[in-house]
Structures are given as C-alpha cells and as structure tokens.
Length: 311
Image (cartoon, rainbow, N blue to C red; front, side, top):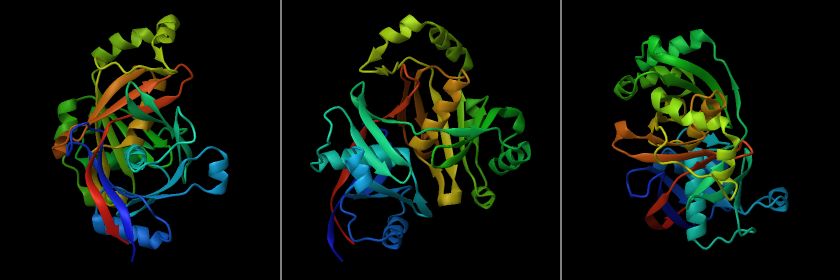
C-alpha cells in the first residue's frame, strides 16, 4: 500500500459539518476500479473521489485533472458535490489551472467547467435529457415514499449522467415529513429527487424573465448574479438504489431540477435551494442561468480533514 494525500471536504456549506461530506484521494494513480470501489464502500460516504492526471484527449481540450467518482454502491459518470469538493481540494493542494478564468474537470460524462460566480465556485450543468415518466412508475415511487399522489404537482425523468425521477411537491410540510420505505425504493432501482417551491414567490420573480434588458444588466462575467431574496427551493434526494438512503446535498439533482424547472417557467433564473434539513444539515445550492441559457450550480466548500490514507 502507498501513502496518499487525502482530504475530507464538506460541500455546499460555508460552515463545517452542515453540508455534504466528500472523501477526496488526491493521488489515485495505480489504483484500479475495484480498489477505488472497495475504499468508497469502506469509508461509506455518499461519494468518494480519486484524482488523476487528465487523459491525453482531455488535456488537449483543456482539462486540468481527471476525477473518478464512487458511491458505496458503484461508480458515477458525474456528480455535483464531488465536482465542487474535488475542485476545492485540488486547488488547496496546489493545483494550477491552465486558464486563469476557469477550471476544467474531466469525468466519465465529459469535461465540466468550473468558474467563480458571486465569489463562490460554480459548475456548468451538463446537458440534460428529460422526459415524462410513466404514471404507473410515479405511483409505485409515491407508494414507496408514503406520498399521496395528490401532492405531486409535476414529474420528470432527468438524465445528466445520473438518472433521477424528479417530483415537484405542492407542500413543504408534506415533503419534509416523508419517511420512505428505502428497501422498496431500492428494489425499484431508481433515484428520486423531490422539491417544493413557493409558487406565489416564484410568480413575482418570474416577471423578470420577460425583461431582456433587466437580464442583460444582471450579468457579472457572463453569469447572472444569484439573488439571495429569490424564492427558495426545498429539496430531498433518496438514492437507496446506489447505497445512499438520503443524500444530504446533491449537485447533480439540483442541476437537473434547475434545468427542468427554469425551462418550464416554474422557477426563476436565479434562486437558492436548500437541502439536508431532515438530516440535521443546512446545504445551500446557488442556482443561476446565464444569458446563453447555461445553468450554473454553485456552492461553498470547507476542508474538515487533511492528512494521508494508506491505499
């Protein structure tokens, strides 16, 4: 075994131990997928990442480093909180990006761009494929959640690497009160993300969508500044299918939700999502859509453990 630099980072928070922890092995060289999966299962966080030099093709396209992402149950092509947390750890360990304005991360999904947005890192949400789910599937998931289908305002199958069934719930109280049957969800083999937004507040903010001049003057470096007074989205994520009953804060899910809800005019161009309340966390995900239509997902990170691991 080899001594490898290691950090444990709390992501989507500026206060340690209130976000989503991420294990980062800063030198993943000479480890194969089985080695990585074994360690990820042992450390038992929602995600563990291993940093590597970019592939030759990735480096030619501007990649600064490569990341492999594992849950206790398997490898992911992309995930949001590992993207921001790995970038934080890489920079803190002395990583130097090729570009002074952005960092480019290579993962199995492709190249992910990370920039500063209103003073915090934000990644460009990967392209989203979405479709209307079969209502029988929605009913099965609702039953596993202990959710009356009358509370489901809208639903969508979303794929930006990870696949999520997204459900928009009409009541925050109902959303936060859910106590799912995780074994039943696992057997359905689907990750489920739920969200609630105060529609009355959203209606006020959405007026700005029709004002092109307001949008233009709201840009900062090509990214619309996040409005802390915008309506908040409350989010929960259940992923027993990959070994995580409930994820504290989920970047890939929030990216998909943002792309879906903004496109359908159900959410404003800029808002703050909160997640993790039922787990005693206070994750904060800053969402913005820029003038080109690109959605950016931002959040703070804090290093909680700095040392070495034997692998």
